[in-house]
Length: 28
Image 1 (cartoon, helix red, strand yellow):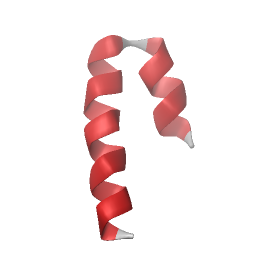
Image 2 (cartoon, helix red, strand yellow):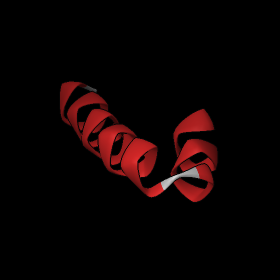
Image 3 (cartoon, rainbow, N blue to C red):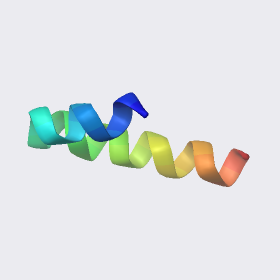
Image 4 (cartoon, rainbow, N blue to C red):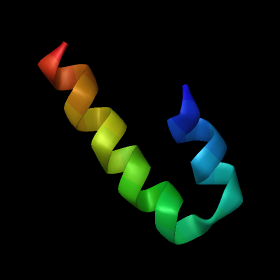
């Protein structure tokens, strides 16, 4: 997923996307 890619690009974006992915997984 693009989240992991963004996570590697920047730490700030990574933290944001990590949180977003976690929310998505819980929703799924």
